[in-house]
Every structure is written in structure tokens, then in C-alpha cells.
Image 1 (tube, rainbow, N blue to C red):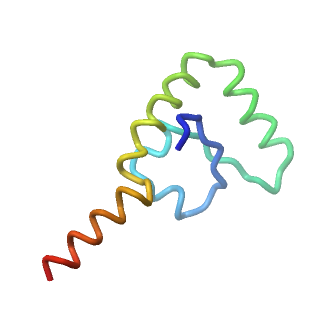
Image 2 (image 1 turned 135 degrees about the vertical axis):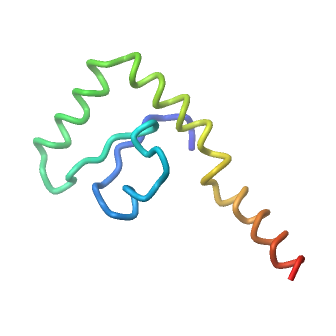
Length: 79
């Protein structure tokens, strides 16, 4: 993640991310009004957006493929 606040489609998979609300907002991507409302939330709340950006950057270590790949390789080598 480039340290950006995330606009996520409102799916069970995205809801399953721990603390997804700390780095992004869930949107119904089939509704232009919902997308516009989400963008307005980010624009009108710069402090919240800043905190989401920081959290998104920090979550890189939990979700990035590069990190997960290393964990998976280590697990395979232990087996």
C-alpha cells in the first residue's frame, strides 16, 4: 500500500479485514451516490483521512504479498 486511505467495495471479504475502518471506508460501488458520499467524507475530514493513510501504510506489513510470501515460505520449510 502506498499509504493511501482505501475505498473498498462493501464485501464480506473486506469486512473480514481486522480494523478495516482504520484504513478505509466501505462503499457500495454500484451506487454513484455512495461513492460520492465516501469521497466527501475523506475530503471533509482531513484528520481522519490522514489517520487512515498512516494506518494503511502501517498495515502493509500485515497484508502485503511480499511479507506474506516470506511467512509462507518459512512455514513450508518448517514442515
